[in-house]
Length: 422
Image 1: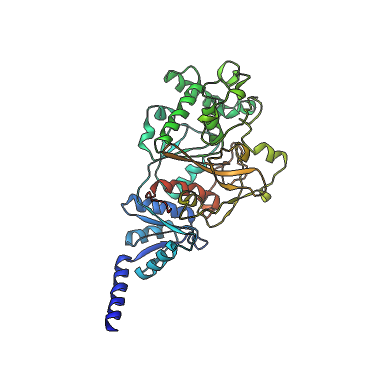
Image 2: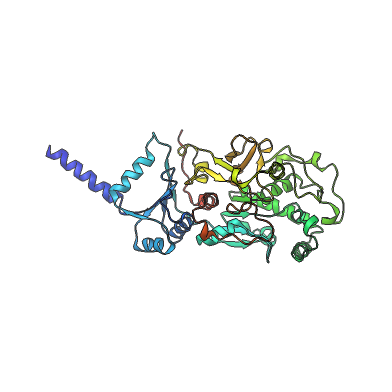
């Protein structure tokens, strides 16, 4: 009997040693500032530490080794945390990794290098991802066409595209804004750079930028895009050998048969769509749901989408990307608000959709050794976000489920690769 008690004491001592004091960061409704919590984990990695992402445990909580510095940093940033002993940590790990629960543990150990594709100078809109990164205090670099074309992407693990137009049509703002100073300056900036780099048309420069980005993803990069960057990017790939720009954009008419000549084998996510080449129509193609929502007088009060529930142990990637303290997310509009399901390739994983409709808001897929995520809409906390609107104050939305989806994506490249269960 004494021998059995001695073994039990030894095992408990071993357990407490293996699981020393930890900092637990809840990501359910107990968290004071969900967005800052991501920045805190990024800071831990940057300081040489590691963290465990507890998938589906209390909203996708985090755990890291205790240190006075981390404790102090949590307090400075306003991030809710608990200090727990080794025995309690062991209990949490055991619960998360049990075979009979839809939870798992992903170790975060790498600091991802982040780039945001952004045109220099002032634009009459803001980028929700830049707002999130800046609020969460996540370091990132800004790059544009010249850096992309020179091979600079190889320096980064994660690239973001937002309210961009890779087709050379300047966002199709011509009809409403071609006399505005910002529009004129945007055209001049692009045309000057195209000439500097030896291109006769901006559309040809943007095509090569899109191809460079595709090469980056296929080589193992992670690409995240929102709003018009989602569909305009795929359109640029499908139309890379076609002229789809009318004369006010590039000096000559578009190919009237362009839609029938699109090559959908080149795209990441979409297929079998037709183009909208009318310069007076604020739309690129059939992919986007915006015009249908406007025509139906869709309102903010009725616009929601639901996140899918994935198996944490068998589908860790989509599980990471959908971690949240809410599974029903407020919808929000943009130049590209979302995607009709019928134009999404079968190889693409749907992460979030409006139930009972053909409207998809959040998708993920693979290209070569890399991956991409498309998130429809412009700003998760500003339903329409019109041109010229003031940037969202994230300190007023620090628990935003919609913004959390953005920040799930920045931690994805930090995850240690793990053999899937078979």
